[in-house]
Structures are given as C-alpha cells and as structure tokens.
Length: 231
Image (cartoon, rainbow, N blue to C red):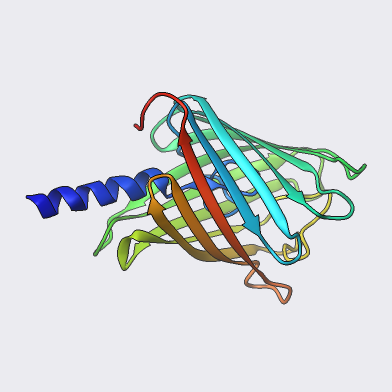
C-alpha cells in the first residue's frame, strides 16, 4: 500500500509540473502551448539559456482556474527582441482558445495571432502517460498566416523524467527572428524535462533540429502557488 501511495504521488507530481512557461510565457512544451491552464493562483517563472540569445525570461499567471496570462522576452539581443504576450482560456478538459501578441520594442513590428488547441492522451506502457496537443491558428499581419503545431510529452524511464517535443510552421517570434528558427520550414524542437520537485524543473532541449543552424537550450522553471490549490 505504501509503495502504491508513493507511486500515485509521483504521477500526480509530474502531471502537475510537466508543463512550463514557453518562450512566450504560455504553459506548454518548448514553444508550443499546451491546452491545460495552471490552477487559479499559480505563478510560473522560467529562465532559458541559448548561446545565440543568450537569456530568455518568461512567466505566466493564472488569476482564475482555466484562465492564464503569460509574457516572455529575450534579453541581450540587438535590435532588442519584442515583448511576447500570451493569453489562454481552457474551456473544456481537452480544448483551449488562445492569443499570442508580439510588441516590437525597437521598431521591429507588432504581430497578433489567435489559436485553437486540442489535447489527446494516449495509453502507454511503463511509467506515466503520453499526450499530444494539436494547434491551428492564424497570424493577422504576417506573410505566413496560417499556423499549425503539435506538442508531445512522454514519461521516460522514471516518473520524474519527460521527453518533450514540438513541431510548428511558425517561430516563437517574428520581428527579430531567432537565428536557429527558420520561418520558411518546419521547426522541430525536442529534449528532456526533469521534474525535480513539484515547484522546480529543468529542461535540456535541442532547437530547430532539422536545420543546419540548430541550437541548444538549458532552462530552469519555478512554480509558486500564491493562493488556491492544485486541481
């Protein structure tokens, strides 16, 4: 019984902490948001190191359950990278509507997108579970208007370790593009997320793996419950 309770606790822990702030601040995989919004009162903060940027700070906050607001910015780029904004409303267990905004801070242009996300879980052998999020969206003022993306996660070897990956036909920012994210082809990112505690996780990710200018990202994610409780 004790072992069963410990196992249940570990699965609950990773299910609560699997998602982390993406580059735009939305809870999700790497650049692709997930369907699930954080529980009401939770604040998430992420620091990502990539040699070409070099530092990204992203955060999200859920003032109410099912509603999430996020923001992110790359620090140290020239011209200055835009401020990335994200809002998400989870209207069912499997579905969410979201909006992404990009405010140019160095006369690099503003962009706005809407998206619909749908999440599916899969039965999997071994520890934990697998799941995928499918996204379709539209960017109103960019030549590459219609957006498609998929995010995937899978427990790997131990309950605290996840394989995470996402694939999209759009980058996480437009005005000052990342040197490792080509907008003219699909962008594949994949790596590992270590759930060290229910309030801290670490990411090791390869970025734009299908292109010659691929890169690496190392990130740390922190979660605070300001009020309320976990769902």
